[in-house]
Length: 407
Image (cartoon, rainbow, N blue to C red; front, side, top):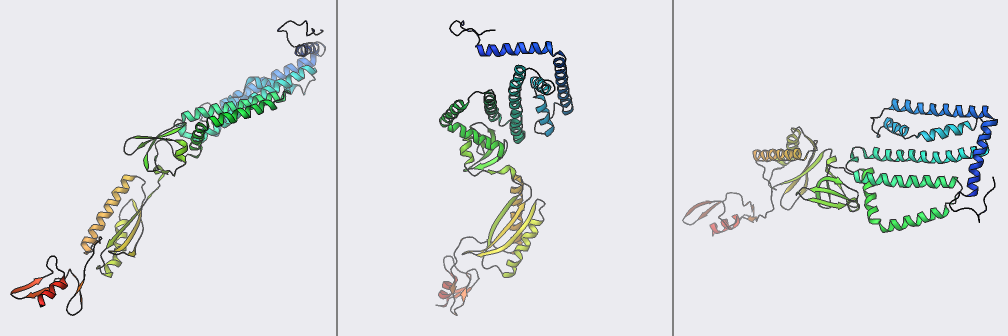
């Protein structure tokens, strides 16, 4: 059939080359079926048989793997891949395999190769999409609902990138020059990225929360002077219910730029207590304090004693440092144990006549014999016309009282 000249071809008529290729494909296929009917029928029969074998394998694997396993498990992931395998792909694969058994005409072989390229790229896009989403969902685990908006955007981005790659692969295998298209897409992507860099920054921060999982909904976190429970992790912001009651909203980027303490993941709590006793405490009592405190802490079921030592000579006290661990992470348990241990220490000090120190200054005076007098001593002072005075008078030190009595 001769091609119609371009000058006399009606508008909307097919391109002669494409029309010629289609005609050649049809004519050569019909001639092949007429003249090599045995090979053609064998090839068709084998292709149909292979197709039904593939369908049967897909059905059998689907039944064996089941439909109710989560994608976070290997079995659920395999079932998802099997369900996403398309029938068109299996048909084209069967036809392509038959071309190695029989020799179809050139146009038909070329058409099968083109169909295989297209269906393989499309099926590969389906498989790659499922692999990426399965990895994301597996990493998200039970937190997928808390990151619902971020997961939606992730699916959109994955679909756009994978299908764009599939289209470029198809065009490249069909002989289309995609250099200009790739360059245009690159320039457009840079422009979009610069225009929405704030949004993309928070989006990638949400992805970092999703994959790194520094916290999840329900965790109690502390950052930048704020402590509260995480209520929602969104595409752009994270919402925290502060201990004071208000809801604090912070962008994901700014939140991850700060140091975050996750209170939910505390295994045990370490308590450090410092106390001081007065300098007049006898050395024997000082030596007994660490052992007594260890016994007090060891008697508590939720506590593990670490150490108790004398650590410093302070200006107004002899200081001890006590360290122990609360093996239950609950804050209420820690507060109750600290209270019980503190009261037990107070009782021990009261029974042992050990006095706590507090910031104070004491003036010491010397008597006539030069001996330094302790203001707490009861010093008898004799005066003309009066009996002995027990202890210093208010506002008068012991040394001054004795000097006046001897005058």
